[in-house]
Each structure stands twice: as C-alpha cells, then as structure tokens.
Amino acid sequence: MTETWINIILNIIIILSLLIGTFFIVSSSIGIIRFPDIYTRLHAATKASTLGLAAILIGAFLFLYIENNIISGKLILSIIFILLTAPVSGHMISRAAHKTGVKPVINNQQDELAKAEKQFYVEK
Image (cartoon, rainbow, N blue to C red; front, side, top):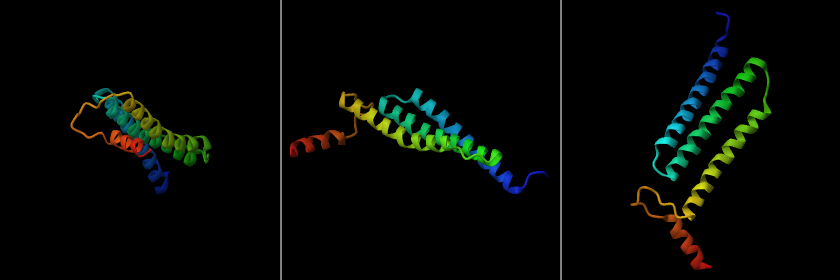
C-alpha cells in the first residue's frame, strides 16, 4: 500500500464531490426538460446547477491542492461568483416573467407578489 490513509480519504472526498456535482447537473438538465412552466424550470436551472457546478469546482480545487500543491484563486473566485450570481439571475428572470404576465401552471396558488405590489403602491 503506497498511499497513506489521508490520501485515500481525500481522494474519496474528491470523487464524491465530482459525483455529487455530476448528479446535480444531470438532474438540472432533466428538470429543465421535464418541468411544465418557466418558474419550475428556473428552479431546476438555478438551484441544481449552482450546487452541481460548485461541487465540481470544489472537487477540482481539492485535486489541484492535494496533487500539485496549487491553490487556484480562479477556482475560488468562480465558486463565489456562481454561488452569488446564479440564484440572483434566476430570481430576476422569474420576476420579469411575473411582470409580463406569465402564469404558473398550477392556478390554485395565491399571488403574494401581486398583493405586496398593490399594497406598496397604495401606501405611496
């Protein structure tokens, strides 16, 4: 046995991180295809792909650090950038869809945003 236990554990963590990221990316792709309206598709596109990309980049960062002793600032910045921008962009796209009048498939839900906007404009 040429590797130490800590290297084996770290390799398992890297493999798990890459597998989890791949699972989230695949589930995001399936969700974008299968979900019926823009709101649920945005949910799949932003949440699952954000987690998937972050897990894959974390796995790549750990691999570079363990194998080559490289601390990649680009990977750290891209993880932070993806975690900050993807949910915000999904939120803004869904707000734009709501403002243009796109209705969700399920009609039995209350429109809390429309109620809040009415109350906001009445108070002004």
